[in-house]
Image 1 (tube, helix red, strand yellow):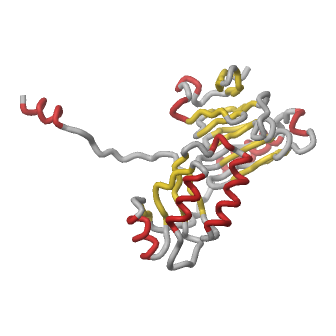
Image 2: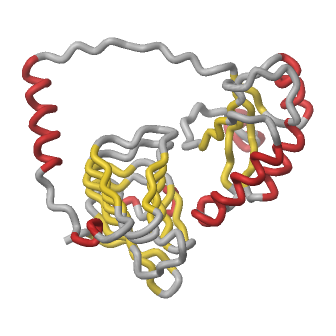
Image 3: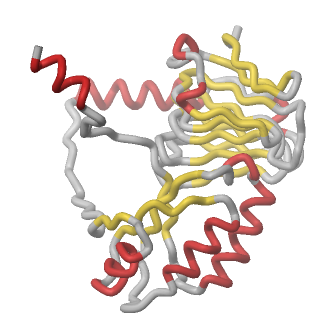
Length: 251
């Protein structure tokens, strides 16, 4: 009886988790420079700036004092929600806490040598050759279209300011691909894909393995948690119909 009472009185539980999080890596601490660049980014991909939580990385800055409150205000004005700071001096850490933000220590990157067995090496070579032979949509060859061969890594952004973007490879978590036209991913899509960034409602997203953090066509978007689980891991096409994103099997 007491066990049931204890469960009824429980208001929360702590759980470890790994949530997709965008890191905004600052190379300048000038709030006005940040404001100017954000304004340009919003015009490129308005769907991304919809109350997106971000971690402000200040690891590249060698500034003991930072106008952190003003930088956060600039972010919020562009619908980004700072939730934490990564790196920085002790005054920066204290400022983060005073503003109600979390603080993470600088990221340690430890290079790791990986030795491939001969059989694994042959598999990788065969995979690269197969990707190179994939048929590329004709639209990608139009003026302004772009073809990217290889993995788009976390923190990387690949864009096509006109026409379609074709990625022959994977789009990792934390990576972003965007195009004025359609986005084609010949591989796993685990990052963010934005098509029709200038308002082209006929654009679409096509991929071979869907696990995207965010999908957007002409400003209408879905996050991973909004995607039908039955579509995850499948080859799909994403189209805008009646002001909603429709995800269907790619046939």
